Length: 291
Image (cartoon, rainbow, N blue to C red; front, side, top):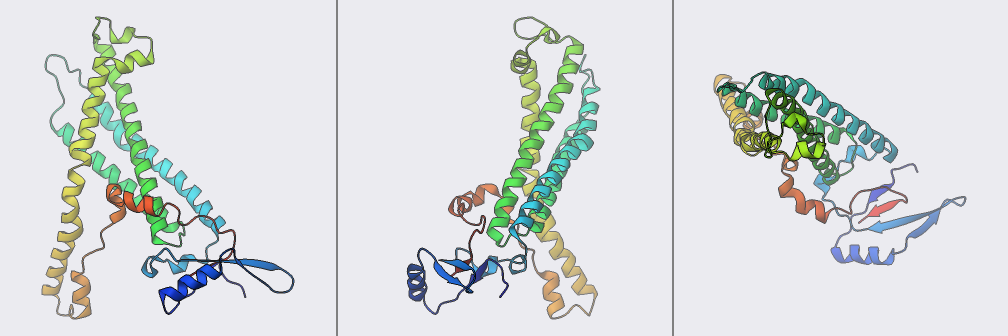
């Protein structure tokens, strides 16, 4: 019989399940007369509704190959978002001399907040698609990989944004003849550490990091999410039901059905789940029977 490397056995009671797992410790040997196999019997650690049955036919090698491609796609996405979105903005902000009160308009900060939100939404979509198409057998493993990829992309994206803006800020301040605390010109500093630790550079990068965190990251996405995900679809659904007589029974219920919230986006809320399930998944070296 040709099958996947895992199967599930359902027992009538928990006691029977525990007894079977205890008797099968060390593996159950069986074979076809020519080749012998060892079967592991383990307690199932995933709920049935979190099992992605359609992915059991995907070999582990194919899953690993998809994961490698996914990391490449995410890396290219981070690079493109930095170059396409942040580079024009940084050049626009760097075009002001900041001399004699010359400063960019307030709309510049609004544009930055919008860019950060769009970048985070874009990275969320890419990370979610990569995790869903990887072929994980369990929703827990899929969400775990999604959280790791999404947060890694955000950190790399933030580092690239800070590096890009710091470079443009340095060129701008060096051209204006900005001095550091000891009176030397910023352009006369020869050490990268001295440049980075100088007050003008620390102030410039600190202001950018503050704007990146608040309100772009910690407020705007969470404020708009319930409006765009819950209220807006429900409002559109009520309008459709009221204007179309065909929207009855199941159709009406589907139109007013709220979407499933993506809990994987909130890494702080799922950190405990990561710690509890850190040993799940992995490679399958021997056949397994889950009880």
